[in-house]
Figure: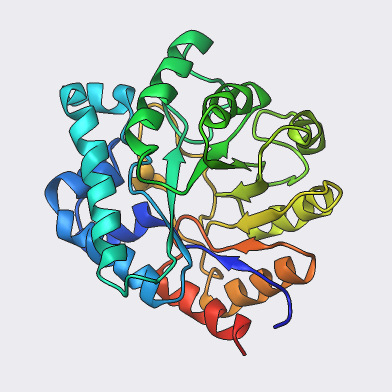
Length: 294
């Protein structure tokens, strides 16, 4: 393939739940990090072996509000550091000149897919600053991920852009309409608001591939690199404050063949960052890596 593409990893959280066989709770992937550290290291390694050129810290659910539900807020810093240690241990197990990038994670602070920030802007900014302070010495890029509203994008990107790191801003769109954020705001409006900032790349993540194909038609208009990271859920609309990710089911048709087909289509439409989100395992990444390198 002639086009230059950065291949990143897939979904850490769901794959760790599958491998650990634990019952998921509100801490999700952070629970696995607490109880099964080696599984986290091994999954990072497997993504790298599969061809991922960048891996993401397993810190998505290490936020004060999530930890507070289990009276664990006092281990916020040490658990973030454990996620960093696991990723670096995996990277360093390969040759010293492996050039694997490490992505810092700036996630939703309360819960994925919520259209409200969940905190006032001052509180949210303070939490993101705490995360950045811990991760900044170790990561190559900050990924503001699964962003569901323009307000959330404004808060998280402002903190990330005050670092010296590259910044990716990754939106989450509606399942039925990839031209709209989950908040109902226009993806085009969101991109236009940030296109003149120092954000290096725009992405759409944790959304169905069909919706992301719609998003691509809008991202192509912005003169910046963009990426596509689909998930394999039937729907995320069942997730709310009263339950956890155990209510989310994998689509029957989200198989490797269809994932490769969709990813190649993203690349044909000029996506320069590809990989996956929830339900994308190392086998999926390996399959698209093989195609890219044919």
